[in-house]
Image (cartoon, rainbow, N blue to C red; front, side):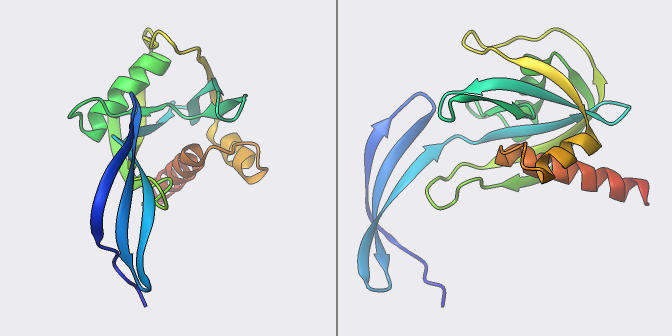
Length: 181
């Protein structure tokens, strides 16, 4: 049986530059309980594919993991930007590329157990190189990885970032289906 929890009260615990945290008192089957929820503006993730089926990827240090992570370009929504606007901006800022064509593949919720964050996933192609425009606190290395190799890296457990896993596998499937039409 599915039970829809109703919010009885909500308290903001923390307000930050990237996220907020609130504590909701909710109804549950056995009475009442509490949920801690991260409020996040969401963002966009870009599977940027070159004409020879290489993915434009980025390496950057991720403090929560204390390591460098290989990822597809992505970024958070600023203000009232829609997903495509975020995708185009982040692709240009992080990689220097602009896309002649951008296709929305899906929207995913990376951690629905405690966050309302939604990520729009895009395929970008017909890429035009240009200059990066990193945020002042970003240190990013740009690299090209053959799409097939990125899939193999996921299957070997070498790419652990969830948004990258979903994006790479969706891009692969989209391109395969498109070529079979």
